[in-house]
Image (tube, rainbow, N blue to C red; front, side, top):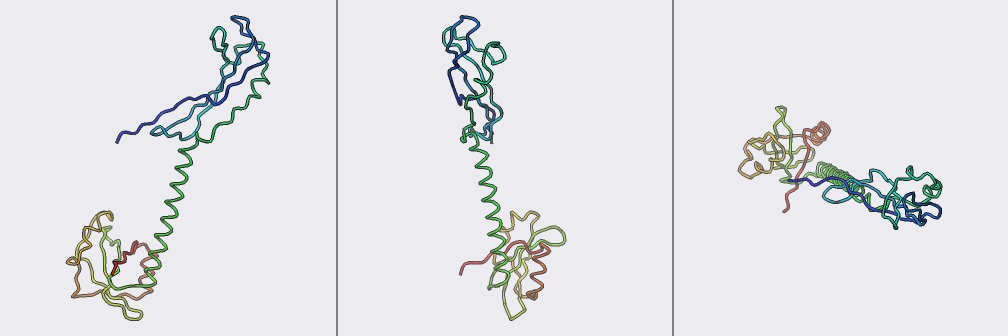
Length: 202
C-alpha cells in the first residue's frame, strides 16, 4: 500500500501594519501574513511543524521577512494573533482516539475472557499456548462442580492468528479427556497459557 505523507503550508492570519513602509516603493499599508506548516498523512493534518511571518507590499508585490524591514514595529508584528487552528491537530486527535478505543477494546476483551473463565459453559473453546511455543485449543465437554473436562485439539499452529483454522469438531479427541480444576484454569490464565476463550453460540 502506498502511503501518502508530507507537509503543507497554509495561511492562518493576515493583518495590515499601520507604520511599516515598503523600502522599494515607499508605500504604507504593508500586510503581514502568517503561515503555518503542518505534517500530513493521506492529506489529513497530523500536527503543526512551525509558523513563519512574511510582510507583503500590495503596491509593488514584493515580500520581506520582518528582519529585512528596519523600520517595522516589532511589537506590531509580534502582537498579530496567529493561534494555530485546531484542525491542524486532526490526525493527532484521531491517533489518540484510536489508541483509546484500542485500550478500551482490549480491556473489554480481557474482562470477557475472565468472565467466561469464571462461568464455564459446555463447548467453550480455550486458546492455549503450548510449551513449544505453538498454539492450539481445548474444548469443554463436561463440567462437574470443581472439575472441568476438556477434549484436546490434535492440531497446532505456529501463529495464533491461524488458530481458527484448526478449531473444527473433527480436530478434537473426545475419547481421552483432560481434567482441570477451576483453580488450575485460573493459574493457566495468570501464566498466559490460556490467553483467549471463545464461547460458542447455542
